[in-house]
Amino acid sequence: MLYFAGIIITFFLALILLTKKGKTTADKLLAGWLCVMGVHLFLFYLHISGEAYNYPFVLGIAIPLPFLHGPFLFIYTLAVTKNISFSSKQLLHFIPAIV
Image (cartoon, rainbow, N blue to C red; front, side):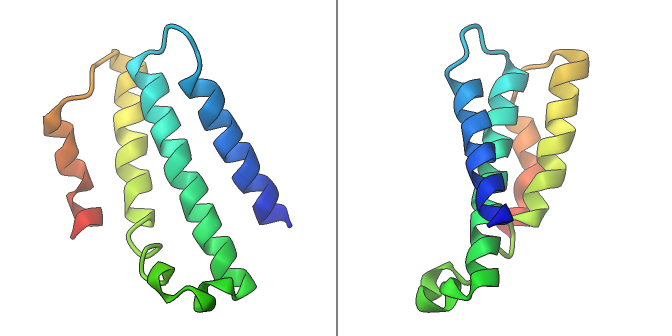
């Protein structure tokens, strides 16, 4: 039940950030990171409750998700401190999760 509350709060905060007027690059990155966290929590909840075994196509999706949190933290911190815009060069940080 606690996981379910975390999932709802995560997606609610992402929704608030996405509907905010005057979004900065950091706001968009944080909203994307929150969505990744929400999906990760949801898949973890499915695994803990045993429901993931009823849907075999979701069993491997959660494996690369921990590799996404580090690059999101790094790029979000850059966006907040140096006020940079997101570029295609920063997509290289997501290669370990893709591999």
